[in-house]
Amino acid sequence: MTNASASFQTLGGVEDTSLVANSFGFLRSPLCFQPYEADADVAITGVPFDMATSGRSGSRFGPQAIRAISPQLDWEHCRYPWDFCLKDKLRLIDCGDLVYPFGDAVAMSERLTAHTAKLIASGKFCLTFGGDHFITLPLLRAHAQHYGKLSLVHFDAHSDTYSNGSACDHGTMFYHAPKEGLIDPQRSVQVGIRTEYDPSLGFNVLHGALINDLSVDDIVQRIKTTVGDNPVYLTFDIDCLDPSAAPGTGTPVCGGITTDKALKIIRGLKDLHIVGADVVEVAPAYDHGEITALAAATIALDILYLRALKQS
Image (cartoon, rainbow, N blue to C red):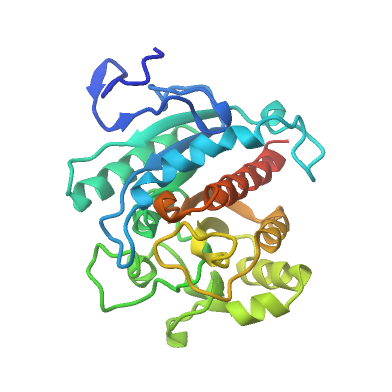
């Protein structure tokens, strides 16, 4: 089926209204309307959700922007600096965007957890595009069902461990996740934090000023030492980057890292057991020249290269 305007698809003979596709997939990957049965290594899902935003809204359009810029990254046979073609090693599908009843954050969360759990059970690595950062909580629930308690490698300007927000808030996910037994803060690392955080919560925080001063090798070694061989969920909030590199986001904070440093850190994580990932908080209305969307798409591409190494 190739009708990209369809509002629902048929999954296993049952009408399913939880997914809708855009006009093309990320990196021109095939659109797939039966993702759980598909013969693929990686499933990409967009989550156009920004109801949990505390700053500027607009990240619901993030998945669309990341997909739209991604053909700019698809012309190289071997993406620099990798020495192999991603699509020679990974079979990618794009599930389109999650659909949920408008204004119903609980339904979104439940549908995203169920959808992701089914993808994982079918043997696929899940890469998800937000949307605001709240989507990581239902994603963690799905991954923890399959892999047990996870280590979190979290790139962000904000710790998102605040306890003074609602249960549906893009600043409270990592306050609730340890309480639900989804992640182990002692074996998790938060990279680039440069706003208020509570050290007593047990996360290993590599704050923004430190990250800018440390070498990439030092940063990678600290992450690897903390995480060890634990299953890792990697979440990248685009506001980890400095606003000069990523203006198109809802809560920009000065003093962030460059795109170059972020990519070098991610490439250094090739030995970690990364079981799932997301890239969130791209708000294209505030972008300039699509540089934020391009940064997000490039980060996502390097995450896929990490996965390809594990498929070898």
